[in-house]
Amino acid sequence: MAISVRYRLRPPKKGQTYSNPHVLQCRITVNGTQDSGFSAVWKNEKIMVNPAKWKCDQQRTSQRDDPANELIDGHRSAIREVHRNQVARGWTPTKDSVKYEFIEGIEPELKPDGSFYFRAWDSSPKPVDRRISEESAITEALAAYYIQFCGNYAKERKERWQYVQRLLIRYLEETHQPDLPCYKVNAGWARRFHAWLQTIDTGRWKNRKISPAHASTMLYRIGSVLDWLVEEQLLISNPINSIKWPAYQQKEVIFLEQHHIDQVLAMQVRGANFSAHWWFKLMMLTGMDYPDAKLYAQNRQKYESPTLDGTGVIISGLRLKPPHVQYDIPKLPQVDALFAEVTGIPEPNSHQTLYSYLYTLQDMLGFEKRITMKTARKTAGVMFLYAGYTIAEVSRILGHKSISTTEKYYVKVTRRIVESGMKRVNNR
DNA sequence: TTTCAACGAGGGCTAATGCT
DNA sequence: AGCATTAGCCCTCGTTGAAA
Image 1: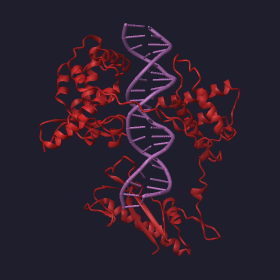
Image 2: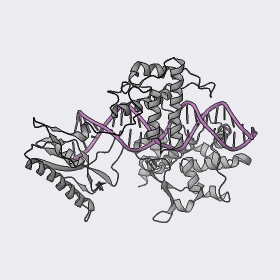
Image 3: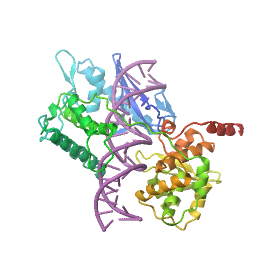
Image 4: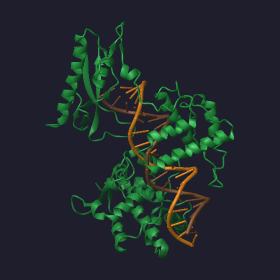
């Protein structure tokens, strides 16, 4: 038989590891031509396997009674049947013809020269908003786009799109180019819009212009709209999707040193700032984002569980921010002390109150850099490293999906971290 | 079969203004 | 003065396809 059906774990992206369970990819080779692979979907479900148990040479998982093995067999025989049927029709199947008929469930059309036509792939009829065409104004297309794609999303997201729309309308008015049709948008126009955005007064902030990077995000949105029009076959190509727009500069990682931490914990703050100080301390000791910290404090039993040997407590949960990665935080004794000093929990601040307090905290510490909510989280990351946890462990504590994120944004490897590593190794 | 990097976008965070 | 609102900034992860 001139077809081979192989499976593999879908390769993880850079900086990521194999998740568990992990998606299986199917790869078919017909007459020596290999397909790049497609998700193995059987009975409307992706076939998932435990990557540690996946045996590539046997093409199955080593776990007994793993339902995935059965699904793989069904999937494979279905593909083989498609191939058999095509041969029976007198065709010479290709990797694409088999893949097409298997995935789409309809036969490809045989052209006189023996090649195939894949109607569902080549000219898929898609529902198009009839009000939009290449003649439509770019502002209308933008509106149609976010109405179609942001309808079910948060209000905030829609507002961001409307903000771009407002600025776009204003640009067209100020430069006297009413109703710019979509097909007239080109790279030069986009660059001029990008430059204009950086010069305007948005009316709200006196001393602040739109940064080049922020202007870029608006152009990316317009690019998304044009991509959509291309997808709907209203435009031939997107003239601005190859432009490289300036990006944000990465900020320096700022964190509090141990003596600052000690100072913060020892500080007696009374009055209106007590609550803000308390929440900052909680974030600094756990490394949680403010929304996560609030949830944890409000329902501690739900998040805490004892370690296996019963000597410690782990705080576990899912981060509120997508993709909701799990975190496991060793509960420090200082956290208990924190809850002991209050009855119940202090009223969570409006974030505005918390931020203005951080200026006060900065002054009290004599810290030369700006202290922000992120400083608390970064401090926690570095503190756990100093305490002897490895980067992999800190990554889990902070709820990062991959270690490279921790390295990139939170952790500067200093001599002190190496010293704490020496201590850990020597104690073995 | 494994490994690699650029890029786009979601949404929390920050820092202003506005309102009472 | 203090809380509410919101434009703008930043962190972070998923998508993507091909080379090693």
